Length: 503
Ligand code: G3P
Ligand code: MG
Image (cartoon, rainbow, N blue to C red; front, side, top):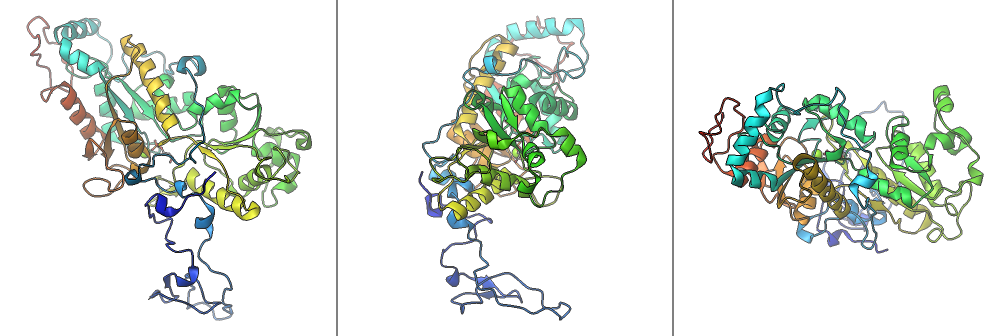
């Protein structure tokens, strides 16, 4: 597998300040904060600022090694934000393949998830018997608009577009009302959700989102980063599943059909010495599933969600990657040919949260592992990364859209005009652009830039929020005069193609 140079991707991010691999020639900031450029005598290379007003009983010993991270030479540059300029939409090494479920219906859990009972009309006011009849009549009289409404679809990113963590972005609620029928035709405009979020079963996440957005969201219109990874259950028998709270990712893997699922707690419970810094609680011991891992080969590693304990998870993953075919306690003679595969559900570096500065996500965890692996074995770590902007994830989204079309319009096909609405240029937008979708970048999340993102510009434009984006797209497809509101008092006979509904 090739290792890539930063220049292959033309990206410089705050995470890759190193421009030269000769650290002696790097610019540095002294302890007084001034910039120094040029060679430094051996022993003084570095840039870490040491406070000068300490208690005075510490001795400052010059570092003998560069304080500049060595990770850049160890990690795949694809780990960094891919740049549209270089037409690199993938964080994966070229040549890797990512299985996705062949047919959505065969492989997904059935189920429209309605936590509060089956809704008649998600997002809409309580049923009135005449309403559906009126809507049907209006739709009969506006066949062109109806055709256009069924020939478009929205794909929503979630974090930073519809919600911030558990907090609603108010325009998100209104958008879903409009798309669920609160529009002049009373028609459902197709839409699905495509998130790099992870860490709990789809049904649980849909229930949580349905509550926040006051709209029923079905698992059949919903894709998390690990959702397509259910296809991997056919490939591997015993898997290590990493990340997420408690045992939720074990539950996810069970639902995906994995036969034999190991989580790090099972390994720690079997041999606490494997994770020397771990404080293992009685409850964790009681809920884990220890076994004799010297008799078990783990076939693959699946990082489904963010690690809750980097030290333990990284140690166990590195142990497995260096082992003979996934047998803990062994060290492979040839680390490459005997190495088991490792998959990550997504590659985002940072995730916006309640904290003012975005928090590290799976991408940074992976880069740490890549650097450790290279440092310990001398070999590049081959790995597969699912999630946006990976092509496999977008292909899977197509399946879900077509299938959702069948559910809501009894017409299983892909609409011609698909709009991706996202807040992250390096994930939502680059992926949508490369997949030929119209892309809309909103300002309610990661993107805080100017007119458009310079590296990965949104093709349909930049919008204040999701409501702006959706209304603009609908007006383009259905006409500038399209009304966002359904008026049940309207008389369809008197209002043919020139329907006038409420604003
Ligand atoms: O980065 C992890 C995740 O929270 C991103 O979610 O919905 O913005 O793809 P989303
Ligand atoms: Mg987002």
